[in-house]
Length: 548
Image 1 (tube, rainbow, N blue to C red):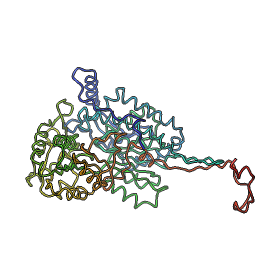
Image 2 (image 1 turned 90 degrees about the horizontal axis):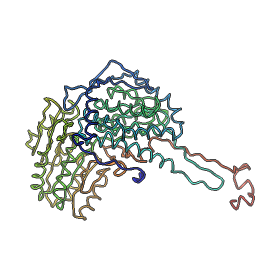
Image 3 (image 1 turned 45 degrees about the vertical axis):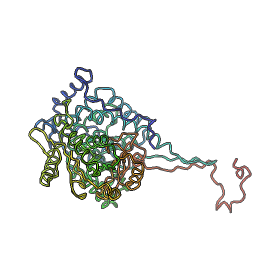
Image 4 (image 1 turned 90 degrees about the vertical axis):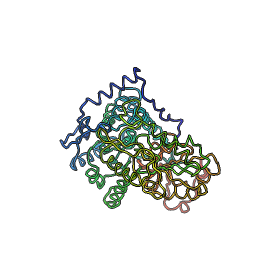
């Protein structure tokens, strides 16, 4: 089990650096660097930068006419080349000592925490992903560093699990890297989830890494950091472009050893079906590790603290524009509390500033791209047609893809706003009769296919005990009197089951064990020297009988 004392949890977000401070000046310089660099982002295969001429732009979501550069997309032939590079590097990397493999990761963590790489990646995260400075720093710097250091500590813990060795025998477990390559598919919403490529590599695997197209620059810079820290060529091979085009090659390859994925439920289910359909064509059964969607709930009991509840709902629903699988998206509140909770939610939501996240007063930036914006636009048009909008409910794409933080109130618990993931700054409320507490527990458990995050607010201990029992499988990350988002590495291991993923808890030993293949090795120091069974071999010498 992960032991927090072995490695620190992520530091608290630093907030917007005060104007005129050295931190402000460094971040301002980094933002200027990212804005003007004109990136021509290549694929990186066996350490070589490969540009194809098939490009797509790096768009700033809150100023979508501003491009930071372009990214070169691969085709099937280059995916095959990346796989060959990974499998070709596998033997030398997998046979290196633990210390030599760990060193570039230790160095990268230090470079990211203390050097110019921190401001560079934070600035890229703010511009490419539309995060505020504190969100970007907590993600691209603090949590990324903590993942690396947690992996280093947890890898030692994994290898320390060894069998007993009776007298005359030495038993060990050799934690081998997987045989083949790991296909890592990372999301746009957290730079720290580039850990999906880094963690398997630390364990001696080689990786073909396909990042989300909307996070291509952050992925490129992360690999540049690792290369500068000394990661050998070919250990991580970065390929950009269309997911299906890349996946069609990687997912059916004979040497696919594992998939490390974070993204949509639909995409993960496609991956699973593809691997299943091809199961007879692999060298080994591939490990399939994935974290997918969610429909995070907040359930209020009549004894809930109103201010704590409202604050958690606003923070949990609207931080990073609701673009977190852990976000609070559905609220169940008792009728006796609803008038006061509604007024507090409306006031807090109206006070949020939507705009350019590089400006210090901004709370909410833009959603990631035009496709997501159009999805949210359609959903909010439906909400207005159904007359369920309490506050917010508008969109504006004149300069950026802005979706106003929105609170809805629906009259039916099976409304699509209560059951389907939007990945938007939208919180939907269902008001239940106070006497229906037990029925509402069932609704929370059964209304969606997901099982990722949830929170219960109550001061009544009996109600908390009852909720804990009924909702045990409703969330892999379960919170009491706190928002259902914001899991910290080393404190709340993150992941869910049901349609939310395989619950392998990134940043823990439980995740790392999926990327090694244990081999039991027995060395007998006193092998038998008589044929047949022990009964036929005659009496052993006295010293053997006495275990000398």
